[in-house]
Length: 470
Ligand SMILES: Cc1ncc(COP(=O)(O)O)c(C=O)c1O
Image 1 (cartoon, helix red, strand yellow):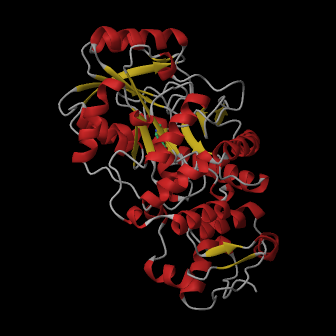
Image 2 (cartoon, rainbow, N blue to C red):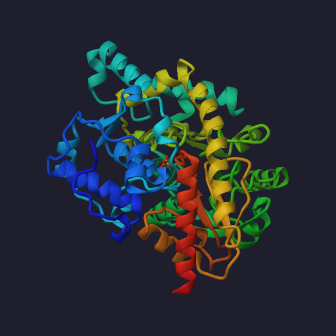
């Protein structure tokens, strides 16, 4: 089978080539030219036919697979998925920025694990097993604090791998990090209260807390992480500090041992609280994982936040908090008032995934895969963008930070890149105070081949040059 009704040249399209290929497949499915079960051409064959890099076709195929239009069948190749026709009717062909807004994953999208490497068959087996063996009670409403076996599995995992001993009763399951922040805001009555916030810092947390009426005090970050002294100078009486100690988001530096001590001393003296957002510390490529701040927290002032978005997949919408003993009752009340209920089937599946050892095996595999994929993107940027960008791969995480070597706005580059179908973010947009930092953030976990990396780096080069010229 080859792509139907191909116009003579992809170059005639205003869209990036991979999106043009994506749109042609979508249109062919919509018009019934391609039907469920039909095999699609191999990446290599289509790349040859269209005279594009294999990476370009691979990117289009990944997008179609992640949206459920294609189905990979291993040796049997890739076919049009059974449910593609229904999906197509309900999902209109996207314009690029709108696609990004809907959460469709674009190349370089931040915060995504490798979507093609998640063990879906194993997950499906665990889900099926949960459904089969569940008793009728599990069809009723779930516990607002979370599904007990998942709370236990998380407590076991944290004690062993993150040096965070806690009782299952201290673990609260949420629908991801912002839902966890919602619980904290309610339990600590944060509306109108002051909170230190890393500058630059995680965009979504910043917007969420501001929306909850929290007064954010920007505290600058340097190579040792949050400048605690500066926080104390600006607002000693803040009720809360939100930090990413293992891998500062977005700069990637760890909070130094000295700063950790200063921060804990401040919370103890002030009677304030710290949220430790430990979102991606499992992905470390050099040396040992850094100890969690919570593991040093003798006074029990740190609220530890984790998420399964990067470790499993973000569509799962499962995160958790470990709250200090003294706050457990308050959090139980808030969880009840906020109706903090999450699907028991998915919690039970995640619990089995952890308890049966699949979680740690999966993370180990992903660390190896990400080392390779990170290398692919770094090398490609060094080949195509050496005069425009400096990339210093960080010891951990799933994003790359590239510093601009040329005088041009990182936000303008990011806008232009998005219009061209690359989901790059500008760090200046993550700052609360006037842009102190400039640079481009990109996710490397879904860069699956050297050709794809080269195609992306070449495209980024064009985007930067066009932005400089405009
Ligand atoms: C800094 C940071 N914290 C937390 C999270 C987890 O967010 P969620 O659980 O909402 O997916 C992310 C995800 O990208 C992140 O980048």
